[in-house]
Length: 157
Image (cartoon, rainbow, N blue to C red; front, side):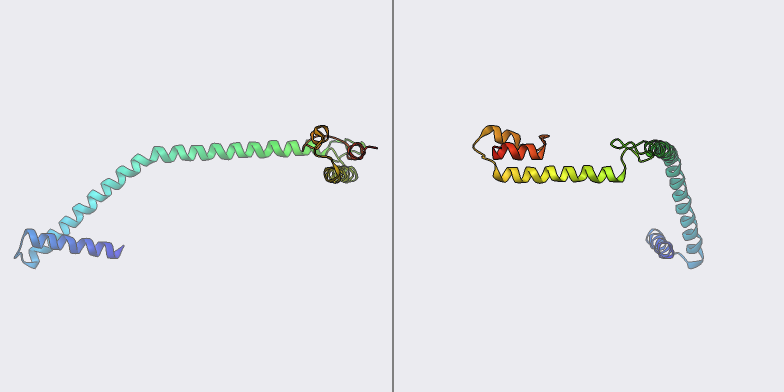
């Protein structure tokens, strides 16, 4: 900040020297100080006007932030309530209570079955006759089929 003030003072002094050459130092100094005060007053007015312009925008941003915080709080509360409700569910497969819909053993069993089905699809894909359109139709991704059944159909059993 000091360098800005010094630069402004030097610029104002140079301007006064150009406008009023040969002015004594005693008369020159009060003129410089007066112009610096006027400049500072103008800058203060401009700054105050800018702040007045930005206050409504800042208020709107503050209101939007508060609304966003409230919305996030409501969403967290709803998510916590939903999670609590989900945690109280019984296992879909074996009926064990308080397992969030699926106990660990049933989850592993389902994952194992899914992996076996995928492995069967890989095996069936390599052993399939790709010239037969019926076989190709059963090999499309996302087709829900039993891996053992698919393997048996492809091998002709």
